Every structure is written in C-alpha cells, then in structure tokens.
Image (cartoon, rainbow, N blue to C red; front, side, top):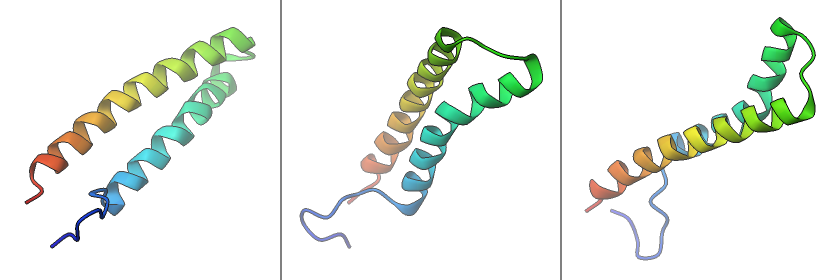
Length: 70
C-alpha cells in the first residue's frame, strides 16, 4: 500500500518518460542518417511532434494507472 504523499509513478512510467525524452532527439537524428541533412526547423518541428505525441501517450498511461490506485 502506498503511503500518503508518495508518488504513484511506477518504474515503467519513468522508463517510458525517459524513452519519450530520448526519442524527441534521437528520432530526428536517425531520420537524418537515412534521408540526409535536415535543417534546424525540420528537426525542431519533428521533435515537437514526437514530444506532443509522447506526452499524450504518457498521459493516457499515467491516467489509467492512477485510476487503478486504491
């Protein structure tokens, strides 16, 4: 049972958060490896899109876990 004030985040949540943060930088760089040089605006826009999609995914993950908390 969780103590009052203890965060509800599980280890899997922190791993998922780390992966989203890394993907924001790594995926545009990986695309640059296959496609060729990308300008800063394209990398920034892709990173922002990945961050938004990852944020929505993490929200859904955290929200469902919080509902199952006693």
